[in-house]
Length: 115
Length: 114
Image (tube, rainbow over the protein chains, first blue to last red):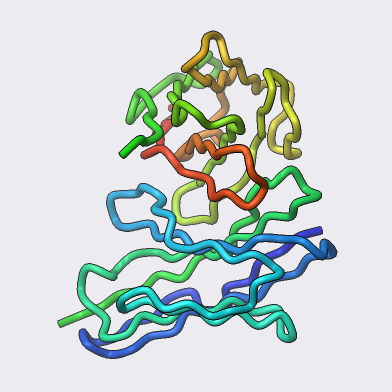
């Protein structure tokens, strides 16, 4: 069965600090996909990034970067120079190719960025 | 940019009433999903739909729930007899044909059962 764990319930940082959100996953499939979604206070779910299990190359997109490590089953997300607009709940999610591609979400990390 | 839309944004209903939540997925997408999020909790999978039939459903998706794609654009979730514990945000999502494609979510319908 697939499972996603986000151990950090809430993180508070001061603007311009870097922050890393942790995600650990469990799956029996050899082919799977990992995602990060952002849920701002308005409530919608905004797709941020997808990673395939066969592609461990890390990625940087502007202030966002992702570190995917199969050896530790982790898919961590770092925001560099955080801004108040980054305040949101961030969800890590997993889908298995053999599981109909439904998303299993973690419990989310509430990020608060203060001035 | 194409997007998933959902109506209504907020639905208030009495316990025991039937509700229908509506979604218009992105037009060339083939796979459709419903998820729900009880306030302050994680997003939970309800059901997936492909080729006009349910492909998978969770244990939450009991006989009180049903889905339908009545025409080429709408995708609906019906709750036959609502309970207090059905109060949640319901999200519709759709994705394209390849396994690795991300799901795009609608803005959600907040269902309040009184």
